[in-house]
Image (cartoon, rainbow, N blue to C red; front, side):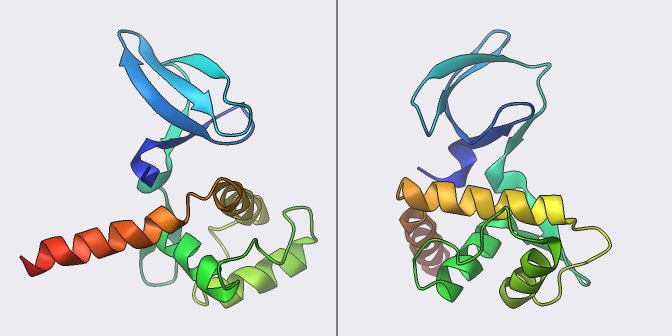
Length: 142
């Protein structure tokens, strides 16, 4: 499953998988406990594939940030916890994305990225980032 189907719903912990659309919103399933919820269009919902992190020169897609973390951690869970100090989180994020914009990327944003990465890692959804890239590369070659 690509990041196009993974959602973050404001006010709800964790990540959700888009199941189907309804007339007034959609049905989503929690990655952690597999419970399905109905989400109205009034809820603030973010699709992970649409999220980007500010750098000093451009916006880097979240998928690339996850890939950088995966490369840094050799495919394992992140070595820092989202509950670590602000300084430790920022230092870690500088290793992952050296030119991220400190003025527009807050410690709370870094915490979310690390939480999401660890959640996707736990449910073996990061391997699909690599396969997506290979598919895109082969599409471009044709």
